[in-house]
Image 1 (cartoon, rainbow, N blue to C red):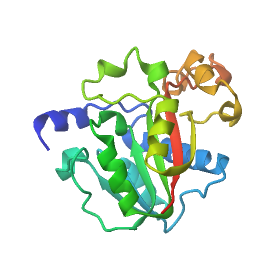
Image 2 (cartoon, rainbow, N blue to C red; image 1 turned 120 degrees about the vertical axis):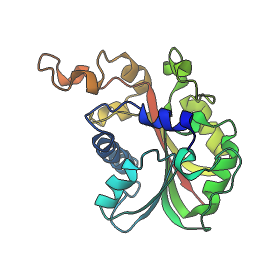
Image 3 (cartoon, rainbow, N blue to C red; image 1 turned 120 degrees about the horizontal axis):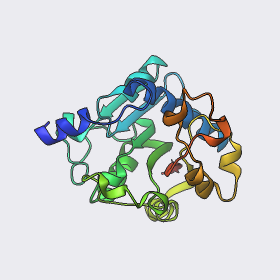
Length: 224
């Protein structure tokens, strides 16, 4: 890990007290979205690969639930996702997660090709990334961002690489599934006045005004 990469990882925001707590919330949201789309939830003994794993806290959360989890990260594993092959066997994983990773890649095609190789037939790819249509004002505030996606462009990108049953919605934590059913859900999520972490301890802000999000969550199947 070089100094820039180490500083970047160490300076990531923790919204709810620690990265582990953030990733507990992430895990619940991912499973809710899988269930909402009638896909199997991540459960005990499943094999999961977390790409862009950072400090490894999401892997720790999964391990807590007895999920066989592996993490790979550019900073700690000396791997270049834009160009390298993953140091993993073919047909190994049931779930592959890319949480806030794809927007950092100059050549995401290389990584999704490798994902298809290491995934089992009918494995699930889970992506969380900013939706550029709603996050454009601050997307490039992060100097490592280089590949913006919207919900439409992400769907086309995955379809072009033979991913199936692609479901994309706003990344909403602890909100009613109604938001995922709503026709203008991305717009609505972006217009909510308060984020969850800004308003958690404020008793004067009603719950229906919390949860603002300009990011998206995507689940898709890997058919071989």
